[in-house]
Length: 242
Image (cartoon, rainbow, N blue to C red; front, top):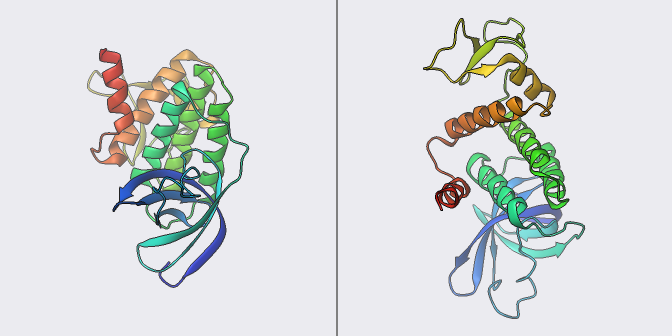
C-alpha cells in the first residue's frame, strides 16, 4: 500500500471510528479491494463538515484516499444508499460483525467475497427477519469469515477422514477437526453429527442444530480471538443479568 498513493471510487463500510485531535477522526473501514484500512478524516468532527454525517456504520459508501504509510488520508466519501438503518437486535448483531472484522481481519488484506457477504448480511438484518433467520445468517457469516481467513471448518468428515455420521456424537478439536466420541464424555463439548452436517449445508431448521452450532462457533471464535473479549458479548451479558 505504501506504493499506492491515491485510490478513488472504492466501495467501503465504516467499521469503527475514534476521535483524533480536536476536529478529526481515525476511521477503520472495510473496503472491497483493499480489505480493512485505517484512514484519517480531517475535520470530520467539525459541526459543519460535509463528511460528518456520512461516516456512519452499516451504510454503503464510495470512498477515496491518498497518501502513504499505515494511516492514509480520506479524500472523499459518498453515500450509496439502499441500506435501511439498523435498530434493536439487528443493530446489536451489526456491532458484533464489526467487532469480528476489526479483531480478526488483518489490515490491507482483500476479501471481496467476504465484503459481499457482509453487505448481504446487513441487508438481511435490516429486513426485519425474525430471530431464527438472523441467527442462521450469523452462523453462515462466521463460517465464511473463518473460511476466508484460512481457518475453514471440517464438517462432513472427521479428523481421521471418515464421513461424519448424523447419529453419532463428536467433539471439535481446534485446527484438527471433529473427533468421534465413543460415549458421552463430560469433559468434551459434544456436538451431534447431524449438527455438523447441517452446518456444512447451512440448514438451521432443527432447534438442536441452532443451539449446538452457536456453541461450536462461539468456541471457535474465542479460540481465534485469542482471549480478547468482545464488547458486544460483554454488554449482552450485562443485559441478561439485569
